[in-house]
Structure formats: structure tokens, C-alpha cells
Length: 157
Ligand SMILES: [Zn+2]
Image 1 (tube, helix red, strand yellow):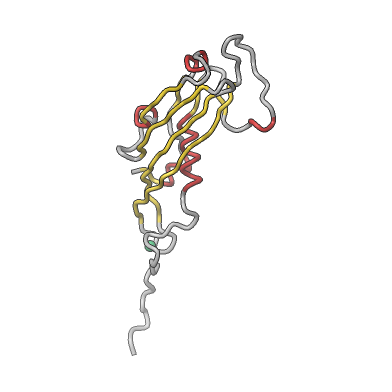
Image 2 (tube, helix red, strand yellow):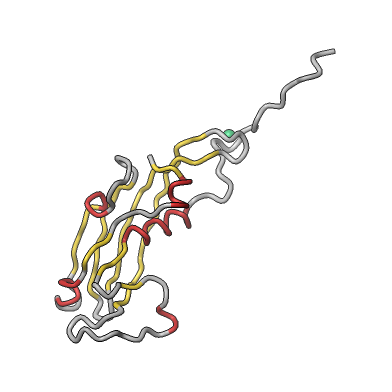
């Protein structure tokens, strides 16, 4: 299981080269099992399929993932497993023209995720950001967690 601290400080490694897909006709797609893309993730942490679609302008990443993370309860500080499910739908634009090799000037609104100059798409970072976005703001091990029990130092009566 992934620890939430690890997600905050380190990156998920999952680069995929889309040069061939960008050369394929618009509408072409590829399917991947997320486990074949994300390296070094603890066993069974992320499950799902990823579809990459050539849109003509870029690559549309479409996926439904379920992720197991270990969170720390905001009240009792216990660690507990938490699963999140979310969908990814994100179009990434290339920064280099696939046929001419010339840099493409991206418009203001398309900043964010891009495909780098080697036609590599960083799916690990994309997935990491989606996981962080989908984590609860105030994680609780259970809805009625009472928190750390105060010690009765004054005894009874
Ligand atoms: Zn708790």
C-alpha cells in the first residue's frame, strides 16, 4: 500500500513514449494496464486501465483507477487503509511537432501537462496529482473516531 507521505514527497515513475501514437491517424488509441506503466509501486496499490487516444491536437488520457493508500487519521493519528476511485480525462499537448521536429508554441490555456520534447508523457506525475486531489482533506479512520483518549491523571473521586 502506498503511504500518503511518499506521495507528497516522491514521484511515481511512469513515463510512456507516445511518438508512434502521434504518428498514427487521429482517433488511434492504445490500452495499457496501469501496473505495466507505473514502476516501483507497492503491489496492488493502483489498479485500472489507461487508454491513450490521439486526438489530432494531442493525446487524450482516459482512465478509471482505484488506488489504495495508507492515511493517518486526523484525530487519533492511527494509520488506516483508504481506497479512492477516480476517473482521469486529460488532454496533453505535444511541445514538439512530431513530423517537423520544431517546437510548438502552446496557447496560454493549454499549460499544465504536456508531452515533452522526446514525446514522452509523464503518466506517473499525472496519476500522482489526481491521487492527491482525491484524498480527503481531513482523513478519519472512521466517521465517529473519538480521537486520542485523554488520560485520566487525576484518578476517580
Ligand atoms: Zn481515528
